[in-house]
Image (cartoon, rainbow, N blue to C red; front, side, top):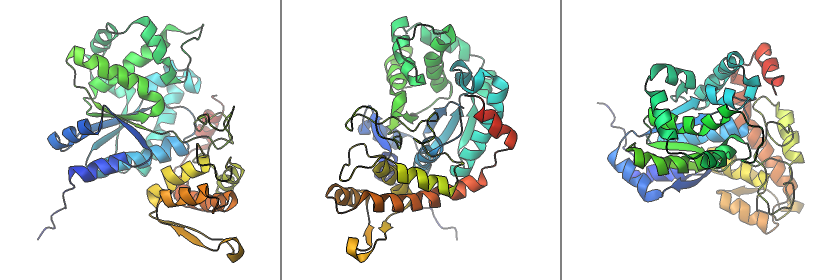
Length: 355
């Protein structure tokens, strides 16, 4: 007799979707519950530019979140936005290079998120002849000023003087992608929030299906925030090699970067090492064990991130012990992924030299 698979109820699905690094559900949880009650296989996507080497934020933290969605029975797609990459001058704005690097992205996501769909921008635009008509109709609802304000989604300032016209196509294209893929859930980092708010405002006017938007926290960079400790630390950056952990870093490099990371004793606000524990380590492990000599309190096991944070806040856990432990776990998580992602020398040089 066939074993009947246990059907997950909506509450469990919502819990999976809300796990860290999820930060918010727009408009609210009730809207997500309604969707899950009425649709047993909602369509999700997250769109990515194909820029530099994959790192902890772009592949692992994001990939783990996609896995939560898939466990919740959601049909997940990673959209590799090759045209957006060109528009945003990444990889030299060269479509041939972008297309080569996108294969590396696709392989990496298939490895970390088995069963995920991969869709290239080019494929979508080639296969859907009404795409451009829909794009133009959408832009009729956008003022130039509003478009300029959304440029922060591509890491640009709304006050940039010299901006080519193509950049203004980026936000409406992102919206038209969402409609073309017929999505129920749009997922992105908090830095993409503006475009989803725009979608939720304009789609109803166009009688287009309005997706639930789910945003996750970005992994902070490992270096100290620029001005003062209360400011949001910058996200893991591809441009500062010390601020981020890349998929291709060796075990040694991962350990060194974490040990050098900014981690003030007792300070939990925007602490990058604690964020690694919360968003990545506790995502994969139910408990973590810290080994230390008796005179420093002896070994201790934390069964939740909250326990760990509270001990750290009370200075019962030293930054050095936290860093040593987190770097061990991070190596355990990253090494098997890194060792399975092949990156040819040609591609490695191509990415390295295209900044």
